[in-house]
Length: 260
Image 1 (cartoon, rainbow, N blue to C red):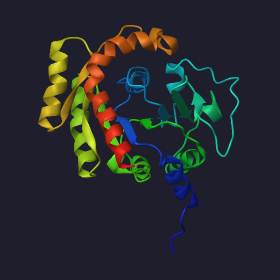
Image 2: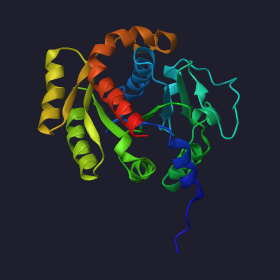
Image 3: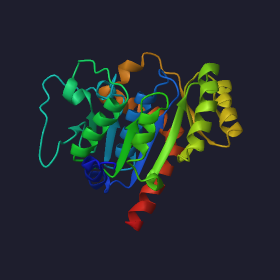
Image 4: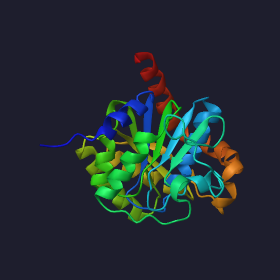
């Protein structure tokens, strides 16, 4: 006889007010997924007036707080009928394992990963309309278990890739796996494109997979100089390129809001 995990009901209750879940995924690390998650959150909140929650799912090496320019050393965990996420600004909140572990490494495997995910989600008291999820690279049982916690009809998944051949070849296999699992994949977003040819490579792969090409962010030198309060400068560059994805999110937000 299987035992029902009481955290599942708590997770679903705490997440029922989200109108859209946006998962950014990639088969490989180092493609700029975390940075693009932060930029997407900034643009949704700043340009589209959306209250955004963002979840750093990379339990082994969470870095979203660094991109947002947050110093966690003196941050106190706030509890009120659950744990409140970190306030990035008035319209963005962040939940990350680094909130609890700070600079300590957390080597987790298998069921430990799933348990930490469930524990965090079951106690987090969200306030946003959209949840952006910065997923760890790859695809495993933990990823599948995570998606089982969500209403997939409210979910949009974007694959992030650079134009490098190793990244694109990995994306080809990766996208097929996601589609085989019937996950709601909306398209491929390129990053670190240096020229038109790089953009064409992203779109060629998207077309071959019968997915939408969502654009390609140009290569940015010394990207760490744009962390924290400087994200606004990147937002101005990225917004026209990310507009296709942003409008899909806002459209789904409007649709799901009316159906609620």
